[in-house]
Image 1 (cartoon, one colour):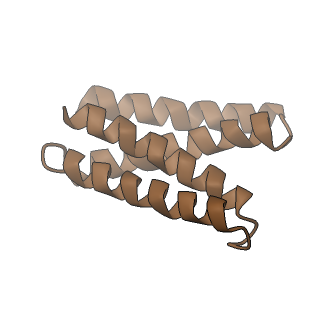
Image 2 (cartoon, helix red, strand yellow):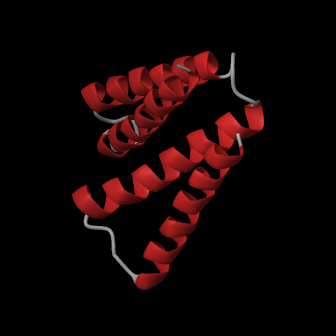
Length: 104
């Protein structure tokens, strides 16, 4: 169950970053509120996962999911550039997430 909590926490982190971008520096009320709710949800589920997972592993995977997911959202929704270097380093993040999962 801890891994499921960690996945939900990662999705919450990605959602929080998406809404944070949409809030335009907390100038728009609804996206600002959604960013705060998603961020809170992310921390809550991360804390649940920490009951059973080592903190270093959980935090590394949580930030990796958030980072990789946010890069992909930026490319898909905000027209951020897709370059070979970005894809290479995105693959490095994903490889690190997989590696941490395999050794845990």
